[in-house]
Image (cartoon, rainbow, N blue to C red; front, side):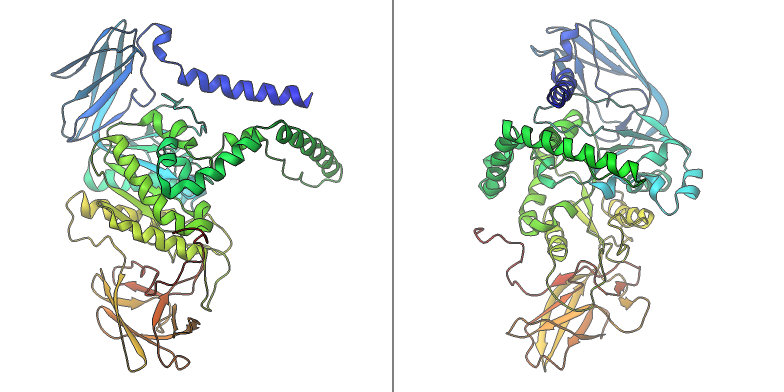
Length: 527
């Protein structure tokens, strides 16, 4: 019985994927992907691809206003045209597509399009935000358009998904990404143009799942990662793994029945080998199943909130995260589009004593990625919750993200988007003087006057809590009577540090270290 159920489950998943992988031209008529549909938003001031499928060799004509574009479907049935750049326009337009049949895409607007990606903190819906009830009441915006991509994990490149564009209202906004929705609404209200948001976040996902599989396999920096997964895949697809799962499932059913009889919650069911193979950790799975169906759609840029699942491999993330961004940009073929992310929030028990932390190392890897062009980081070390990995204040998260877009993409140069950041250290008279960039009017403390969050060490690399004082607009002096010859300083170096320095516009000081001591998450064999 269990064996038949398992086989049936695999068949259903495989059949659903096959429907999306099979060239749509096999149906012998004009087909369009879900991303190109009624209520869509075209990215203003850039050429926008429009594509679909038809019988091979069919001439397809795409008309939008005075624009008429033609293409011929290839052997696989796919055709693509590019519309000429358009200015923002809130007046609904119709795109007419004629091939073996005729389709009309109605209520098309032109404005700003952003993709909202990452794991559960990007995926967390507006309904989960502290302000959900009030914010949903002010969320009827006909020219703010939303579309979500279902979570499909597969190694087979998907060409389409089930979804549709919708105008934002007080109902559908509650099931959309809170960070994404607030970010898009800010842009819509500030810029006064239509905004389209594509939500493809997947809770618990690892960064390697968001990258094309074969590109990871070709890069020697990720050899250990990929070899480990190949071994795991072989094990998961073995008869032994299936047999172990059947035994575990049977045992779970017995325990679940016992719990029910006692009025207690059932224990968590075991993961099937198939669920792991089609899950959100396997390299390439999300790229193939979620990203690829929208690949090439005209957009302004991406906002990203992910990293928790990679914290234990923070050293690797310093290579993997920028690589993912570079790969996406290459895949999209529209240059170095803006890519802005949220640094990990504070989480777990508060730590007021210095030590090592994989979350601190992951934050550092995120900050290092600012070396890529057109990137930005929203620091939220003050917005987390010790007892919840999903902090419920997403409104302020979006506000910090949108500063980057307003300042860098929409010409509002008076806005400082970046949190204060460490620049240099000078040591003299048993004290370290630190200088910072992006201070936006100067540095200050929050909550108490004392400066909190600094640690200092000598040649022994033993960290102690330090005293600190803001000594100028862009400098902080750090010292400890326990360290007579300091060599390095750290700030907010913990999963949930006690820290309180920010700029006068309210952006928290970016966690940092002045040392280059080996990262605790660096594998012994890594170079």
